Image (cartoon, rainbow, N blue to C red; front, side, top):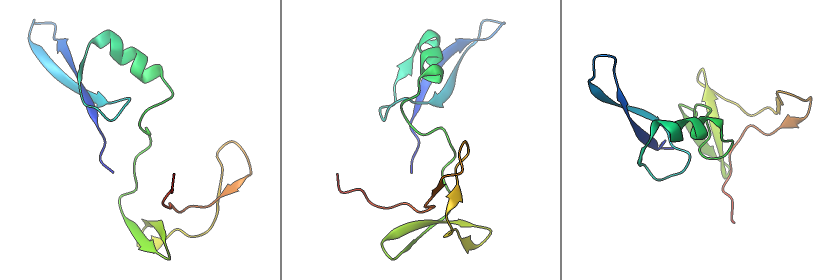
Length: 94
């Protein structure tokens, strides 16, 4: 996974101009105005804002996350509900 960033041009209090990188709402890097960055932060679409797994292992047609040297294979509880979900990633044939 490779995150894509947009560039925002800002001015410091002493008048110097500097660039800031923010996570892009799409897969195309571009230069945006500071006003556009507010809309990007408030939008719900775009790239996933959660950190991506540091290490993945491919096994039996699935990608598993590795945490502390161990594969995560047990179902995980959801954050807002007790519904459990599979912790692995798989290829979508869409």
